[in-house]
Length: 591
Image (cartoon, rainbow, N blue to C red; front, side, top):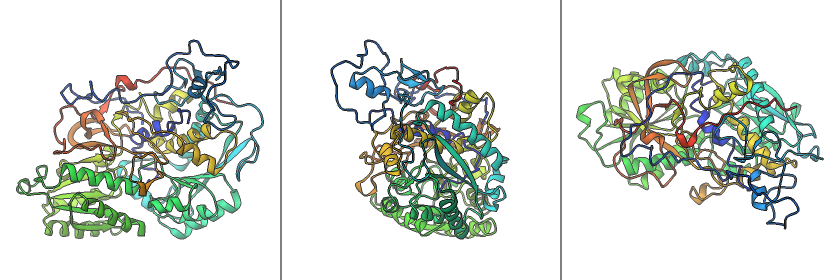
């Protein structure tokens, strides 16, 4: 799930920086304080991992043929669409306009992961190519939860996020001109319609009513966002043929195939994450002593695994069953599996019961897969019961952020380690959505705590839109996402892909999710610095080997590289050399 208004969003922005581009380049928080860079050990990324990102764009424009040159291969792009690399491959000369740096083939944005140059479009774009599309506008609905949503208020109160819906809207409207300046939109601009939810993020009835109202009264081309603890909103939109990005919790593969080409997520899919967690446990943890437990008596015992997982729908139970099946492929069993419901009124009672059962079952290693607030209750209860296991984090949304991890019982969390979807952090002044917004707009975003959660969706949309071309339809939007190769992993950004790329087993492709890889992390309760919202404090996640990332099948065998600071990084004060940020002056906003 991807709950909005979480706050520690600068960490999530790393998902965006490449996700925004989605490698459509091929033919086909305000923090100012940082912590140390990795040490120069034999495992340090200084000589092995930093080359991280590569691009296919050329570094020179010398001797480009004119358009009268002999014809080259047929362009793989749609009619009316041309990017820098394809023009080079075809041997033609194209005027890419003032926004293009012809020495790199990318736009003049102060972002290492800036998109490729697209040829400015002129001519007839076809007008109303799809519902919600005209010659001048693309109607997009952005769904926001209520400011007063009690479940979100319960969550965000833990990290003192004071961003409001008004801040959200102001920030989104400040982001759109950036994208419409540096991305090609083929004569159209987004007409953004903000819809606030009529019920809570877990209310099926109001979610469905919101979707019906949007479909019948607004008739958009696409919807961004939705209630994150019910899939009723997305179901209703898709049944009416309306595409949506991140409109609800992640669903099984057959859901996306059923509703193709309408449903997409930016984060990793639940089945994908299950495979990676199972691989990590099977290769790194199973059969070995629980040496990182807080209870010394556990450290000589072979690991006994228990699991805590959030239940919000039948899909949650199906996901848990699929995870246990993936573990069984490595000969690993879960001795005690306990689910909970995110309800402020019952979470403490649930925590007491669940911890009692895990302790009674002799669990040495607790796998946590849920929301970012519940671990506070579980860890406090574990200490109250004098139960000190290992805590294995699994990439669950925002549990692997400092902003939330500092709210957990530190006697427990000092023994937390595992994998993360997030990438090694960089100072928000140096990189990410916050830095990009300030660079383009000359001021901080109103939603300064949350811009990293806001930015990924328009970033993905505009990246695909540039590759779609003037004939915008739901099918062509999908084709633009699916038709390009994966990005290359960086230390400070994940690898993104959609479609059939051979990265996952055949039964979970094509891929309707973005992020594919993970990093290995562990919690350092003594490290100091800013969290993802810029708040100074104690406790940070350490990224092993400078943030090296792994795809499914690449996780190495052997004991986890946890609780050894050698070669780790908490926050890069500047990007690694191979991922350095270019310097440009911002262009005037388009139009």
